[in-house]
Image (cartoon, rainbow, N blue to C red; front, side, top):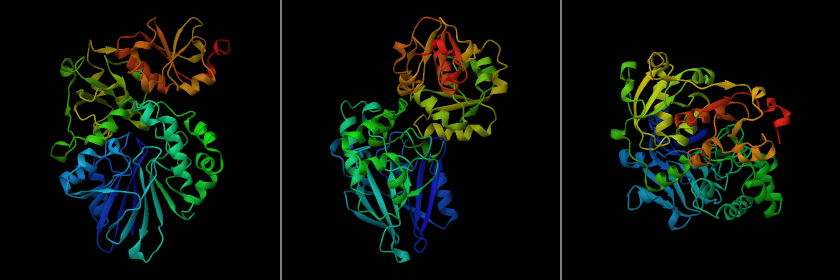
Length: 468
């Protein structure tokens, strides 16, 4: 058996290529839309991708399953559980799609996968037990858990309400998750846990940075999992719902598109944005979403194109910033430090359904554009005026713990949806816990015409007398 975890660090997302080396057949589990990465790994190991499986309808990225089925003719193994509202609508009637129920078994070469219904994160969620029949095994070696069990955490059950807007389902989903976790009691402790996400994902609150684990270890040391196994249901529900971060706005769109079917990439190829010169910026300013990918937030504040969003490429910030503030049909101009950044940015953006990436320009050239450059001030937390109008863009749990007296709290990922609640008195002093989230938020607010001051630095440096 061949097994490879293929990770997208920007979304902390894991896909899995599983192949039978005897027959040369392979499948990809939970793929993203840029498929060339998976085909390359398969080819390098003398495998051909003949199947794709999905653990659930994803909220944080667009799936590549439809692309694989309709452009490459592979067989899709999809959940048929969860009821009529939780079906893969795009695959209905497709001869290459097979819908799985709890306990169903299928094979790729001599590798057997068994579907287990593991709802809670979503109603239709499946996990897969993997057995290497060709290697002589009669017990599973691995458990592809999707967003059910992570290393150090379990899947969050609140997204249907907090991201997709389905009122009243958060607590029932948490209770369903509790039952699903307890239903794993009969599974062997040696199983490798192969999760769909790692540290940095918005699909949990305490995900570990270790890429995989084993079931026995997670039962002992994964706090949420251990609580499900040992604590009363009500205590688990309180624990799992507390402190979940506010999801980016694009999550609701991902749920919709993955259910109905992500758009196919034109000719199966990634967008190829054209180089834009400084002389052409008049065609873009005010007419497109401008994403400045520089990592230096101080340099951005000091000089950037009018209307630009601060969306640093490193650290997974680009999908969050773009997914929170950019409309799905917007034309996009990238401001890059070098041309090589363009390809990576295109991949990160198409993974969240932002496909109209039409141009790029280097930051060095962009900043020569006379008449199109603007800035906003930065101060340290210790210099925050006592009478400042303050916007705190941390999460609600952080704000509840300690905050500046009189501050308004709106998580930076939710600003576009709650823009009418942003204080109008200016200048608006924007802060977070360390400076990065506030930098992203300040740029967005400035692009919407607000007078902002970026409060850049640790929350602990705000004068104590201002803290409640």
